[in-house]
Length: 118
Image 1: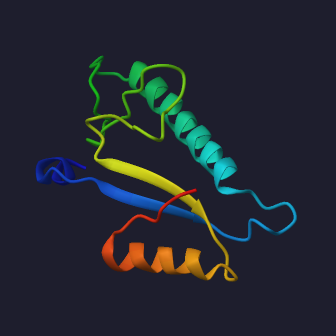
Image 2 (image 1 turned 180 degrees about the horizontal axis):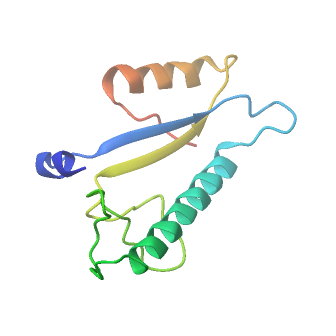
């Protein structure tokens, strides 16, 4: 995390949801909600551990030096994780029958170009 900050760049993550046409499958919007909920759970556990820590320090680093998400409000905004978090998350859905979607994923992997999202 610190090296990304020093470089002034962001780690770009593309979450690709497939099989959204299958019965019971989740679309990219639902997956985004699930990722946000999991990050919120982890943040709450992390805050509980920090508040119950033995050294009494209240900073934004855990015991292992990992940076915690400083979130204002009740939930994490996946569109803007924070200025001090050098990560950007993007979600899309595609399938093996969607040639344009697959080409967009290939372009992201090869060149880092994010697909135009609907």
